[in-house]
Length: 235
Image (cartoon, rainbow, N blue to C red; front, top):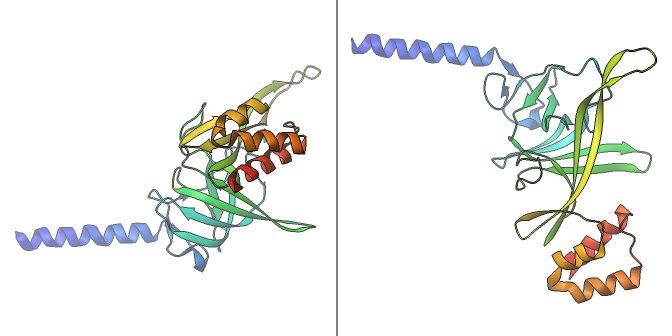
């Protein structure tokens, strides 16, 4: 009886191994282990947006990326895209197959975009506290990192529209952006007002006030907000 029981366990193990081998996406060698479609590390790609105008992704085509998983593993030179509707990462294997990395599995992705000026890096990170309608799996673009972290939230939503002339209904992606500061373990949605920054940077209020006076800050200019946060982090 004991031998029969052990034989059943052995056969079940073999079946699981064969099943897993039949459901894998081979990644680049630098990705390390294979991603199994049947488990939390990945699932087969499904194009849900074929009839929607625009793109769900930061970039519509695949770019080279560095991916850091929530357990700390890091993989370089992965062909990947960032879905800003679902806030998850899509990758392409060396065989051309596409797959998702499950929600919450990626803590950071750095995407390299080739421009006429050279390679531009876009760093997105998840794991920040819940704020507004955004959970901890939401990806934010990171601009400054220090005592204060400047973050841009980029959300893409699907909206229904009606062509008034033809009466035709169609769907398209709408982009909404908001800026936040992560400081002291809290997320602060940015108000483009001087008092907002003086208050959240109250430990350096005098220096921040002086910075505004000397630089004639226009808070409608996002580059100047980036420089202001960098200045605070340098104090």
